[in-house]
Image 1 (tube, rainbow, N blue to C red):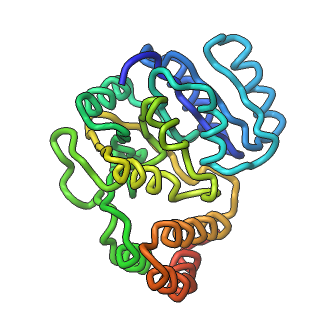
Image 2 (cartoon, one colour):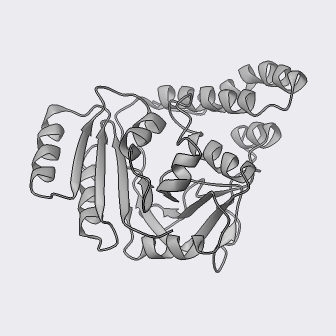
Image 3 (cartoon, rainbow, N blue to C red):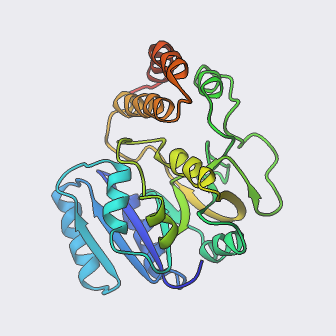
Length: 274
């Protein structure tokens, strides 16, 4: 991974943490450009974003015309970028200085397409759920969302250096523009959630790799969007079902997904609290 680094931030009613996210990116010497995709923000925030961009030539504001979804928003922001690297980061995540260099170092010498992620932590410095994960299977989804986590790895000891993993989080993800384009970007069939898991899987199936490095990180405030929790949980459930149908090995596995889908949706939505 070489060349300029463009950060892509997709925002939907994110709140004040979006400002912190953008200030951190705009002041990081390893970030050459920032593209903000406005998926729908209050007019006061839109005014602030316009003013923020006007004073910074390297920052571009893209109006998506409404909430087109996270993956589609990233694709809109990444359009036309094939040289250099793409840093995909949540609008409520604050990039730790030196992280881009660490992500690039973790990708050096790895087969393409390569996806790299880092530690995403909360305000107490604790690793949040999902920055490093095993490969997603039906069994792991059912057990994890029923309360017995067999999928994500945040409760296991962190590695001392870069390691291959099944998937990393779209809250902090680096890919070369060339690899992102080769994979046709995020699958826009996912409106919200699981598109990161899907692109990691597709990278692996294309002969590439997904890497995690503890030397890169971002503070993630989390739960800053004004979207109701049950609605977000519903998106997550729909995305999981779409993922398993998409990657099913044949008719029998697709039938199993259809049978399990209601149970999976209940397990996810019933845990959400608006």
